[in-house]
Amino acid sequence: LRVQRALLQRQRRVERERHEDRAVVEAEQLNHPSSSIMSSSLKRDPEESLADRRKRLKAHALAHFNSTRAAWADLPPDALRLVVKHAADLAKSSVPVVPTVASVCRAWRDAVLNHPSDLWRRADFSGDFDPNDSVIARYCRGGHWHELEHLDLRDCPRVSDEALNALDGAPALTSLFVSDVDIATRSLAAWSAGPKPKPKPKPKPKPKGITLETLVDFLGEREETLEAIEIDRLQCASSVKRENFFYVAFGNRRRTAIAVRDSPRVLPNISLALPPSGAPFLAKLDLSNSGSATGSVVLPWVDLMRKCPAMRELRLNGFGGAAGWEPKPRVDSANDPWTSASRDTADGAADGDITDPREGLPGFEHLEVIELGAARVTTSAGYGVGQSGLGGIPFLFRLTHASKKLRELDVTGARERLNPDDLGSVVKRFADRSRRFSADDLAGTLFCEKGESPLRVLRCSKTGWAGAKARGDEGEAFQRLFFLEGDGVGGEKKNVARFPDLRVLELGSQGAHAPLFGDEALVTVVAACHASLERLKIAGSAVTDAGVAFLLRRCAFVNELDASFCRGLSREFRRAAAEGDIRAARRLAAAAADENHAAVLESLSARVLS
Image (cartoon, rainbow, N blue to C red):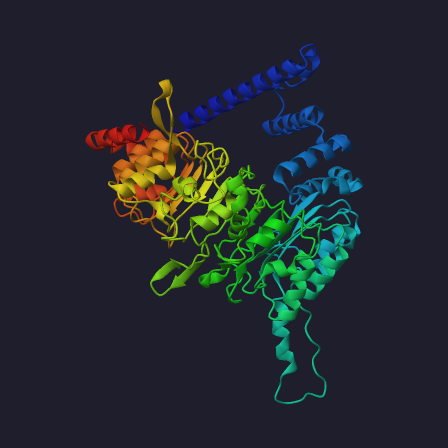
C-alpha cells in the first residue's frame, strides 16, 4: 500500500509539472511567438528541485504581469479628472466618488488635488458619511469647494455653526440643505438654573448643531447668491427668532426653492413673509408635516398665485397637523376672486365681451406637483388621517384650472369632500354662471374632457375616489372618474381613458384603507391604465386572488404592489407583495388562475371599454 501510494503521488506530480510546463510555454508563445529563447528557458531542468522551479516560475509570472498590466497610475491627469467628474455627475454627488479616488494611490491623489474645484459641483453628506466641522473647513480652506453649487448636510449631527462660518470658501453655493436646526440651544437653559451658587461657574458647553441665529446671518450674507434653502426639523421655541427666519427666507426675490419640513411651528400665514413685489422666481414651496403646534394655519392661495407665478411644486402634505389648514379666502366668500369676477363681469358676459373665462382670475400656469394630503396621526386604535383642508372640488378647480403641466396630485384624506363624479361635472357646474368653461378651455388640465390629462401620479386614499360599490350609480360614477366618452372608429361612441399616462396610483395606504375597492373597481383601473401603470397601492381593499391575477396578467409594467391588510387575498399573495417580489406574485397569479372568474372579469373589462 505504501508503494502504491508513493507511485500514485509521483504520477500526479509528474502530470502537474507537465501541465505547468505546457501552460507556461503556450502563454509565452502567444505573447512572444518569435521568441524561442524565452520559451525554452522555462523548461524544467532535470537537476532543479521542485521548490527552486516554483520560485523561478513565480518570479517570471510577476515580471510578465508587470510588463503587460494596464498602467492606471500613469493615466494622464486630465483624462482621470474627466472620468471622475463623469462618475460624480452620474452619482449626483462628489461624495464619496472624489475622496475614494484620491485614496487609491499617490498618482491619483495628486491628479485629484491638482485642480480640486473642477470635481466638486454637488456634495451630498446626508447618507452614512457623518462629517464634522473640521472636514467641511478643510474642503473650504483647500479650495476644493470654490465652485461648489449644492451642499446637503441633512442628518449630520456633528456639524455645527462652525461649518456654516467656514462656507466662505464656497462662494458659488446656490442651494443648502440642513436639518435639526436650533435643537441643541434649547438645552443650554439648564445651565442658568441651580439651587446653590458656585464660586466658579462652569463655562457653557459649546452648542452642537446649527443654531437659527447663525443660519439667519448666513442667509443674509448670501442674499445675492443662495437660491434654495431646505430645512428638516426646525425646532425653534422663540417666536421672534422663527418669524425673523421666515422673513429672511421668503424676503429674497431671487429665491427659487424653500422647504421647511417636519417643523411643529411655522408662520400662521406665510404670505405675510413674502415681499410686496412677490417672489417671481419661487418654483418650489414645501411645508410638509409642519405647523402642527401653530394652530389656525391658513393657506393664502390667492396671494401665492399672484406673488409666485413661477410655482412648479406645492407640497403641503400634513400641513397644519391633525387640525389641518383653512383656505384664505374661503370659497365663495366676498374675497374670493371667482365670486367678485363673476359679479363684476355679469353685464359683460351678457354683452358677449368676455371671450376667455380665465380673464382676471389667478392661477398656477406652471404647476407640476401639488400635494394637499392630510396629516397621518397615531391614535390608541392605530394609525389614522387628520382633517383635510381641501374643501372639495370647487377649491381644487380654483387651484388647478390653469395647470396644463400637472403630473402629480395628492388629495389623501379628503373623505366625503371628493366624489367620483366630480371631475366629469365641472363644465355642468359652471354652466349657469357668467364664467362658462368649455371642453377646449379645460384641455390638458385635470378636468379635461378629451382624455389628454398629463397626470402621472395620483394619490387619493381615504376619499370618494378610492373606490365604490360594483354596481349601481356609484359604480358608474367610479368608471366616469377614469373614463370619458369619446369618438371611436366610424364615429361611434367609446370610452376614452382620462389619465392615459398614469404610472402611480394610490387608493389605499397605511391608516387610509380602501375597503370599498374590490375586483370590479380593479377591473376599471386596469382597463384605464393597463398600458402605463407601474405602481399600485390598494392597502386594506377587498380584492381577491382572481382580481390581482387579472391585474398582473393585463398590466405588464407593474413592478410594485401594496396589498397589505387585504383580507381577501391568500397569504402567499400578501407575502410576495410585502416583500416586493413581483415575479413571485406573477407566478402565483398564473398558478392560481380561476378560469370562470377570469372570464367574468374579462367580460366586465370589455363592457367598461365599450
